[in-house]
Image (cartoon, one colour):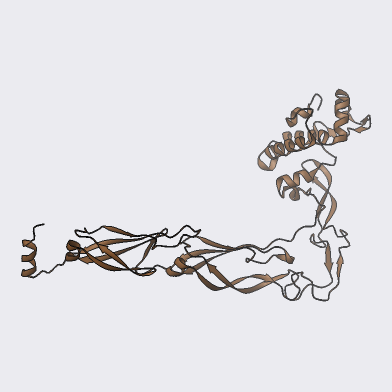
Length: 362
């Protein structure tokens, strides 16, 4: 312990503000926490430094007495500062500011029993639901309204989600006095200390009731079904999803519900092939149309459209029908309809047809 520079351990200057010291501590504690693969001794040293310079009163005494502060570690007090908590370089038997650690490690504090116990435990929220929504090709192009039935946990309509039988007496928990947490002695990596844990009598709610709801057994939720109308936006594509906030499983005791996530699957069309926002089709023409040109009708998602076939069109030529494709999901117009021309070559020609072709000077 002797000779340690707490400011150096935390990597801050002696003029650092309390906020700067706290930020430095959080960063180092996260880096060296044993449960994250860090060095336990280094973690204790960091915490030891923070307990002194992170406390304004102790920091003033540390800054004032310097080496005298270090000499006091063997026991007793110096100038009103108690050093009996420091033993052999480890920090034990003192009140650690575990509220900082509880916030930092997002639940690791609860594992060691040192989360900031001033708050009630929030009942566990409902889980999200993922499901497949199958739609037709044209519904994906132009949008649609679908009605679905979802199996899920729903809020109990008998108790209103509270978990208490209607008419039962609801009282403040006599064990934790409504705090949801109680104090107890517990051994941790820092030694024995007084910590806060969840009240087992009320399960952290701070309230008790004389009788559980007979329909949901005190959970505030039960299995059920919900009918929903889903608006499918025009232009949605295969694999994309629709998220409905709060339409997943209801949470325990009126806590927040999860989301409903619908993954889109699209039934194929017998004629149209979709590629992003473009639509692709093939159309056959005969030799005469290919050689001399023609006007033909093309089926699109918007109905028939006339397409001019110029003279000498080759098989495999692709024509673009601009803006006749799929509406873009987030605006900005439509895709295109691409038409590939296939020249139909007859297999059985009469002698007369063969003679005509032989006489044509290609």
